[in-house]
Length: 119
Image (cartoon, rainbow, N blue to C red; front, side):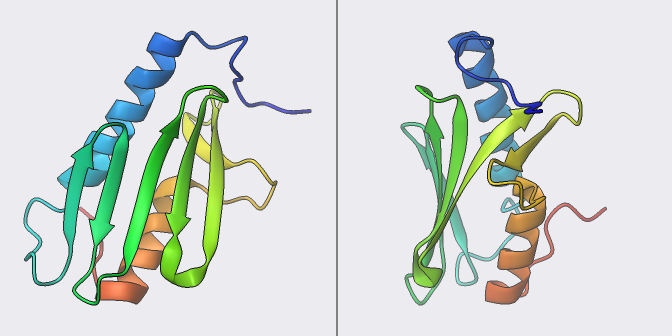
């Protein structure tokens, strides 16, 4: 059974609010990061994290399907996340048990030695 919210069950305004909260949370992880290590920018429904070697992580809102997409261009990989209301998390829609922040934590640590979302 699919526990994800989809476009017919989730008003677009609520979806956009949840996406913006996620984008703001991601951007907050870069407040004290040296731009020579990584830069994070938000614009027009997209968050772009850029590294000195010009590789990027791109998070984008996909309102028509109520998803959040993450592209790891240097790895040739993309993920589509749907929101699981029971877990209050963006989860990979392919059943690989991947949560968006966990994915970002792993990639940011591997790519730049960053440790986001650590207290």
